[in-house]
Image (cartoon, rainbow, N blue to C red; front, side, top):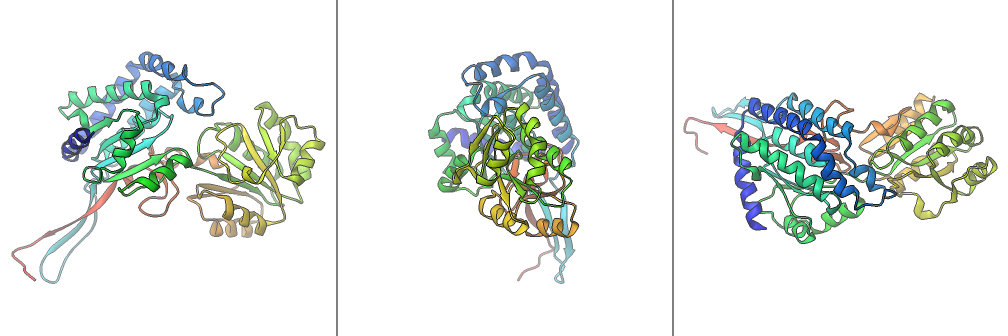
Length: 412
């Protein structure tokens, strides 16, 4: 294991020395290679899919079809044209003693990524790390073993074409002992980024001796305030839940003001039922859904609030005004993405100011929390913490700072 870490550390020096133009060429070359290998990628991906139950919420995350593979290539080309963050001068001045001082963006070094199910992360992470002058150690889940292995083999082919050590992007075996070793490899790895479930993030947080940036877990709420346009509210709730429920920015809980519940819930019924969405309703909202004969209805338990469903499931709670909604979100949010639907601009601003989350929405779906949607290119994930990076963790955050001082013999 240590040899893998040593070789990646050595390769990081080669990557850090690359010019912006060469990094652009590498990513464009990889995009073309992925397009050419589409059929082979699908074959390897099918080996993974065949081992997973289609009813498992992770199945959709694992799937690579023609559109998603083309999306990988497009994402690579988008990252290739982003401004290179390395070498950006944040500050420069001449000190009274004549020293010329600069604060300059510098690569992090070796970035360790631990992730589950999603083979697209392999390409997203590799592209962002290479563009920002970093090497990457990838620890994917066993569910995506064949997909990840083949995608990394394509990366290695491109790296070797440019005379860069293939160890600059290293994929660890799926055995858990490699995860444990990675988390203790502070001599070689500069930062660890877990991307996945709350369980994975908690494990990494509790076991890593390396600085960690948390991404992935999302418990997202949409609060419908009593002045909301109810047709708009219904569209937003349905979009946030059904367009891609297996991702972290999908809706988990709808909070509905008691004054509009009787009018809003009938607008949701048919649209949610079309996608067989199971509703876990509190006692008050359960009566409204039952009255309208909603076919996929269950009584919510306390544990159903604050749960990240990652499936065609959602909890619903009736609240008495914005104070109760804010209190519920404060207790159950993962600080990812939260939304209010209201026509009252004063309450909207209060919600935006008081909710503690990486992204806060007024009259829009939480599904927009995404690096590409924000114009940042690909992302490593959505950071829900506050140090170093918050929100879409994209290219601009994969650098640190270096202070450079040039003198003429000054001593202190």
